[in-house]
Length: 253
Image 1 (cartoon, helix red, strand yellow):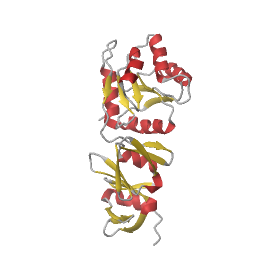
Image 2 (cartoon, rainbow, N blue to C red; image 1 turned 120 degrees about the vertical axis):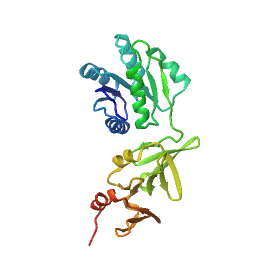
Image 3 (cartoon, one colour; image 1 turned 180 degrees about the vertical axis):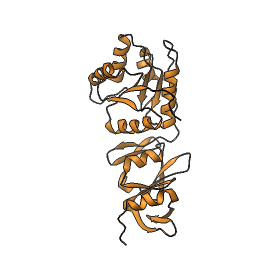
Image 4 (cartoon, one colour; image 1 turned 135 degrees about the vertical axis):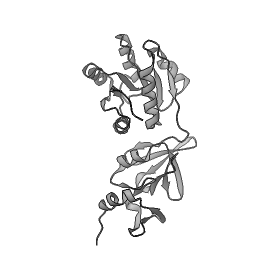
């Protein structure tokens, strides 16, 4: 699933960690020309420097007095008819009403996946110019955690529960969903295992297409049987992951 043509993208997002995640995901869907701004003034400067094809804007910019909507208003005020995609962690009717006058192409939740990012950009690029119809890109039923340095905030019911990354035994996937194993409990997330692998290397290492383990939680390794024990759980080591996994460890022979 790759974008079929070269696209220049300007992203206005104040969170460096979320921007790093976006950069990885954009590269994975074939978009390499991406410019990141963290505040309104920087976005205006980059806009005239990089001449983007699509704008990806976060509405809330921390302590910045101006928001993503302010930047969109500036662009529309200059009669630039570029596709605008809004990023939001809380899509609602009030949110839509506050920015509909900027004629966005679509909205995408920060509960993100490669497909939803691809879908949003594809919709934006293929909307007839001058006839933008805002579309909400739906979110998955299991939202990703909010990440703050070494802390994950997993959504449990109507609250977010904080969990230190060091307490996560391993991440695992069943093809449809990804889970973080913490003691005897599994916390769901929509973040792909590959993205987590890049984010937490080398503290977490991939041992199998379905497992990403916390190195500090490894109790024993049996290369002959192709298994490891992680906090009491026996997990398989996939053949294609065996060599790179073992090379990352301090094995004393």
